[in-house]
Amino acid sequence: MTNADARPDYVFVDVTNHEVTDIAQVLEDKDIVITTDGGRLNISSYIEGNIEVDAMGRMGYAGATFGNHEFDNGTASLARLIDRAKFPFISTNYDFTGSEVNGKTLPFKMYDVKGVKVGVFGLTVNTRGMVEAENCKNTQYKDPVAAAQWASDTLRSLGAQVVVALSHLGWKSNPFYLGDDTLAAKTSGIDLIIGGHSHSDCIDTVANKEGMPVLITQAASQGRILGRVDIMLKKE
Ligand SMILES: [Zn+2]
Image (spheres, rainbow, N blue to C red):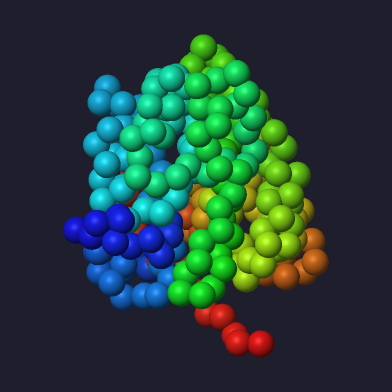
């Protein structure tokens, strides 16, 4: 298993290639690896996620965003988990003012992957009705479309050549929740959405508001499959 500290260039977690089963091999193979586990690594269990975040750190995860289950034990527990993790938690559409999590997350992060600037931001579904109110008190959900557009624009202005959304909104929109498909259609500047929440094993392409294609993919859930996205870049 690779030590996280030795692999600062590697980013992320989700799934598209069912032939790939070994995350260590994926990390060895490529210059840029974007892999996703689709989330839900049972952080809500009674061990409160310690084993999961330690394993994620050792596997070389360079960043993650929150799913709804990360709030199941309350924000004090989540804050402790963030402190323990060897990688940052990126959260773009939540205001944590007044909670223990405040100040412990990044609104976005720029990764330098062998000279390529990869900008990443993170979106989480509205936890109201999914998580006990007491456990997500002092957390405020904000419109993911506005948050995503702000992050995408900011990252591009900082020189991002690739912009990636880590999303725990779910793949398809429904009358109650905005999903990755609508997020892609209503924004610009996002190249790739790596999803979670709906536990979908999917590869989808949606035109953004400028008509440019946005790849949406998700690696089911609970680490059952491993996703891999290879990004080809043209020199200008
Ligand atoms: Zn979820």
